[in-house]
Image 1 (cartoon, rainbow, N blue to C red):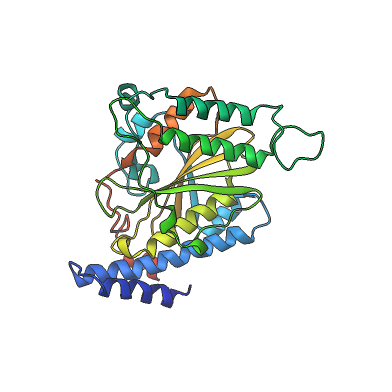
Image 2 (cartoon, helix red, strand yellow):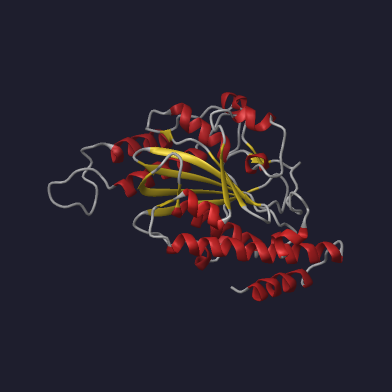
Length: 318
């Protein structure tokens, strides 16, 4: 979609509903249309790349800054001084006390999920589509199984809490063409809209890869997913007043690992906070609890998504 088409799309949507101030509309339409074009360009750069991993010179050339963050210390993320250029500041993980106060009720359904998970990951599991004599599932299917297991846990019953901890389902609201299609080497599991009040644009997604992760390098599938979600949110009629679209991506990667990527585009560069890769297994209770705390947590309402961090319009429309 061209810059003009994106701008016209946002204008039509704004005209169809009341708004507070015309000048705020102009700002959001201009900035949002420009950023949506930038991230869509990033999507196609990653799509056309011949490498599974994006090299440092790619990130520099494409305007991407990646910084580490400590996934193992959610309290530090919650208590750190918020910075509008720090993607992790836009989300708030659940406190550890929440899971302690609302433990999982070990029902027959939960027990069945555990047994299925362990069965499919067992070395002797026959898998499907294998050549005669081979055992075990492919790496892609293995990581997809891990991603499924996280989804199961978001729906498990917890003591003293409603039926599920999971957030509002949002996947079906995305145009099909706007998300990367399922491939042999990666698969989208789910996309959820995260909010503490209506119309907050924070999004969380789960994906799996049939590729081993490099601790310091992004996978091109990760960048494609982040860019596609941001682009779609910037064109969504419900969020046209917002120009910052925070995305939290749970990326299950080979051989048996997971990491979290949190991203925003500040009008100049795509900023990504990247956790270390954590090894996971059916018995990795601490890791799964950590992932649930991040996925089922909310957004930080103190962080504005209606203005760029430096409120410098010229930097994005120049």
